[in-house]
Length: 272
Image 1: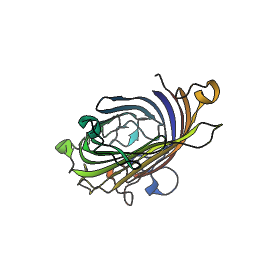
Image 2: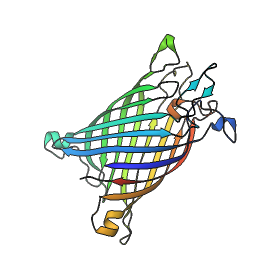
Image 3: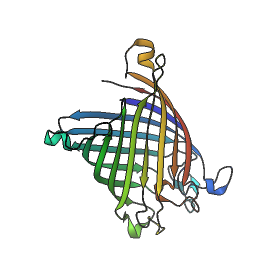
Image 4: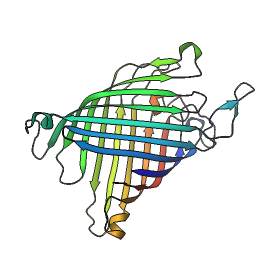
């Protein structure tokens, strides 16, 4: 799958300024190209997603002298990669011992990673490792799954020469993902999205205590291929809303830009 989306009013913790309250931070648009692949095999599933992100100049790629206070005038470049894998206990044992009809379809071992790099002054390079249990719910149509995982994060920060890598504490993490077709026979619509919660994981790069992170995205998706050409799951258009509270664990009560509310829109082309 290849997709493009536009996000409005994105925020970056510590990026102060702009109109409105100082604590709101500076708003910047983002243009995002995504490559994603999902596949299933005998014992589980694999999901890989990579976003290539270009910010508006309001979210600068860095700062110039004197004293690193003048923005370069260029928006930041960033990539964010996600991998999630599962190993189904029913699939591996060849039984239905881990299924509850009408409630749970499969219980799986879950594992994965995130990797994020950008061209901001921080030169952020973050690696997250995750592992735990995933529940695939037995729903009439679409899918709903919940993963409860342990989360470990490592972050490289170019602004702190004395401590270039921060090793965060292990923390609990929950991921709810869903894709639910809506009951409109003449218009093929669905709701797709996710909710992620990451508990406090120690102190950040600057020694500040991290906060509970809450992140959600919900898209209303129109299957254009099915609507026009009777070829489902080929071409989609979508609009959505993205919310991130205490972004990256930064405390939104004190750090500008740590709370984001963004509308988004885009198109997706499925190649298989």
